[in-house]
Image (cartoon, rainbow, N blue to C red; front, side):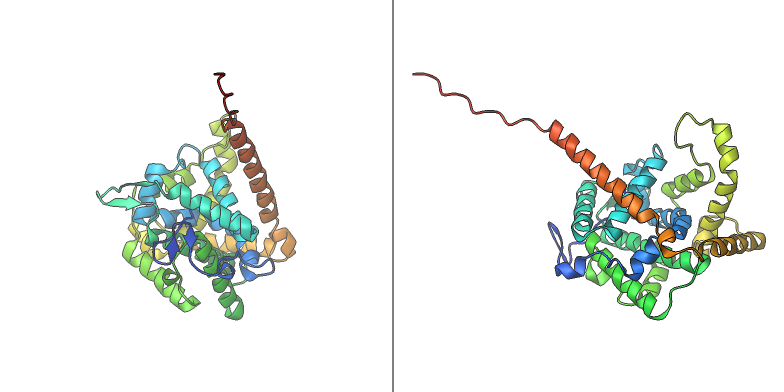
Length: 318
């Protein structure tokens, strides 16, 4: 189960979301969303986003039952980054094609959660929540590691990200119209719906003990090399969770942790903020090229696997 997907039947058709093509375009190249969403600093909050998403009971059940996160965490991370980058930074055609692919992928994902309740991967509330976490993530990243979005830039960011939500298939009535309405709905979801589950524990364990990206790296050497990074990523992940969710998950957070997080954030801000925008946005072009390469490779493989057209049998002589 990936971190993006469609909304509910209200406002959608079998092939996608109703609305004008203009309302379902990715953010403009010179827009606020592309500038913020592609910033290197947003990667530091990626683990936090995953925890928030799987804390929703439907998303958590789907990830536990259908995702290859546990067996292939690095591959899952790369595929998710490629998908998100394609939708936000790709051309309108690439963005809509990726959204359609995700709808097809999730259509058959159903099951029963840990409480015995049936779920489906196309659950509208769950995917509206996933979209909300993707909207909030860059905002929190900028507030902690850079310059917070305010005023017109904040309004523009939300407007552009509502367009991204429409591409993914989130129904219009599930896309808050302004930053204040968004914050209200986001907080309500955290308070009313998020909690602990098996997927949350799997994610937290993977963050605390990240697996090597390949079997050739000795486990002991990998732990030694990654310990400083793991410590800081866990500090950011736990420290930026809503306090009420942090308490529900039983994650300790001390005054010393808070000081360490603020100290780390200040270092990141001093290091990255002075960099030119093209340097801070170096990842999206690279990921788009990799995504295009993968699509071309998959298309070639599909053509090779497709049965060759058989010639019509010659008529038998009478």
